Length: 321
Image (cartoon, rainbow, N blue to C red; front, side):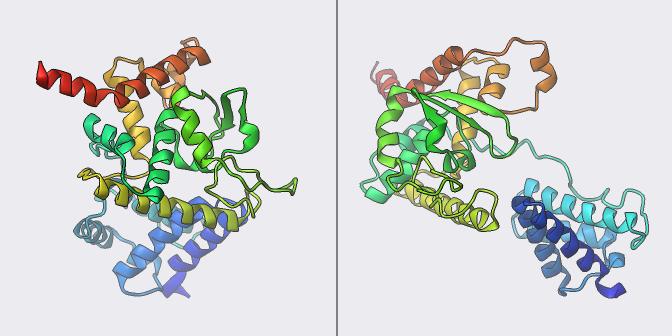
């Protein structure tokens, strides 16, 4: 029993997360455990094998495989949480600052926003492919919906769109959001709109044809379907970037970071950016500030999208002047 107690503790916690419906968190823990067992060379890990030396070697192992620091930090924090549960259960010895020699912070140096001209190309240059045009349309809407995450986009329902305004709650945090539809978004919305509606009252009627609507939102099958859709979209984005000769890395989160960076570059207050993204990271600051009205946020969003769409025209004018 001792030789695999860490593994048992980890799997028990992963199962408890699944029972709570926290499938995304369980998925991350499962990936962290799989990675550590691959490094250890055995599926059965004891708590005594999780020590400063092995953790340091594991960190170097992940770096050698070119994992990003934030991914490494996530895995280390998952292992730390499992180890601490073992300590609480009396199954593992308490070791002061066990994870002191590995990275468990946040690497803010990772630049995920695209340069302006690459972003313009990705969103507006014709890829000469119908399937890639659909991918491009989704990318455009992610940007034009104030940098909306793909998870929120995929789970939008028909009822969220009324009188030209999207009102929904963020999938990750539950934060209530509202986005006014821009004129430039109407064509892409029509192109992507779901034509197959659910006739069952307890199943979702998704606004866009990204998810099938065959599963209830909190079922594990729904989470599995979403993960498949996310992987498919990210692969399609890579194909789109290759077709348009974009050299920067592009993922579903590129448009969220790019929207925020563009807004900051144009002098938009950080409070406005945070509120438009649905972040809670400057909560204390927002207590002292009046919330921005939808009309004000729509103005910033319209200017942001117009700026990117017309950047090539400005560039050519500058070159020819």
